[in-house]
Length: 315
Image (cartoon, rainbow, N blue to C red):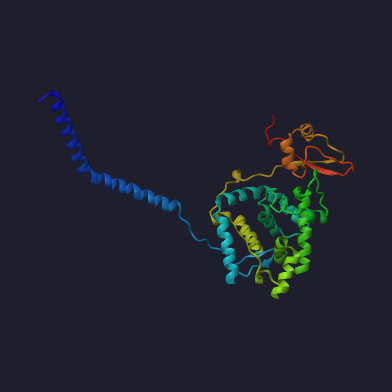
């Protein structure tokens, strides 16, 4: 036989032997592969396990009992607790932000005679961010321009006090206290914050009912108070709902000093450097300053917050 023929036969024999060996070993390999796949499926099943949550049997809002014995009420709370718990990233950030901003909001609520539970209304309104809605509501408490001006907030191209947490909280307290006097209930006052006093009054007359939990309202207002309740429950008991956040991972309050300005400021960038910070930091702590300078022909006194050194890195 030619050398090439001999080499070809040898190669053929090797291939046949290889297939024979593979055939003998394949059940074992298949078994190992199956075991690995099964193990991965079990691990995935354990990792992705989703369970129904136990909701509380007793709950209050601003000292008013939530009628959880009512099937509809219980299921609506159940919905909001599940929706917000399983939106993990959003709730985790909410827990972190609450640590920073509740320390500022809580004393303001006490100062303006509003129950502490209303801090959760701010969470429901804005997620503790100075956002602007599609309708134009702005700030932590989400005031429309007309409402803000009606309650005395300055709103123009240079200053928008809807973004001033202390002043906006004061206005929110006034609005909610007025609603409480009208309806006799903090819970209904909270609903009216979303739907308006006129909107709630209209539905009460139409349905011959005076209690929020007895009213059939539009989807947004119908869910509104239950979202507030869900935030109260989860933020008060984060570990119960699977959120474990170390103290070092929470956003900490940044101490500030307050300076009073009664004159125009021509350039906020230069002004910030004079205070030992920069333009960005000035705007972070004073988001109500809306332009690059401040007109103040009237000599109005404005309180500007300046963070103490040690919390930011400057050029």
